[in-house]
Length: 109
Image 1 (cartoon, rainbow, N blue to C red):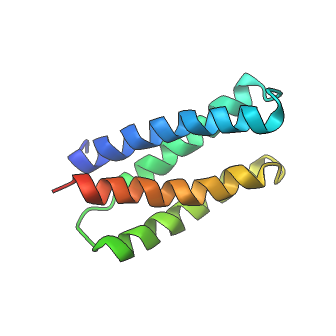
Image 2: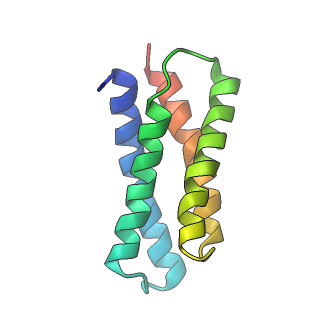
């Protein structure tokens, strides 16, 4: 089910995942190991897939709310499994959910 929405969401999530890796490295003084960074990126990719699944237009305000909700839920899963170690990364995930949903709403006809 590789719709235009899914392609846009996955591309956006992959790019935001790279930004997450850079941010995590900067915040930790380049002390994060490769496994953690891959998991961080993968979390953002999974978030983009989940956000890409819903079809139908909700309108921008509701779509952004959905992005915030899904971003919160998916980021919390990673945040919890890492021992509640990176609050900034968790909060960024909420914002990234909103960004992914915004990009999807803007570019899917």
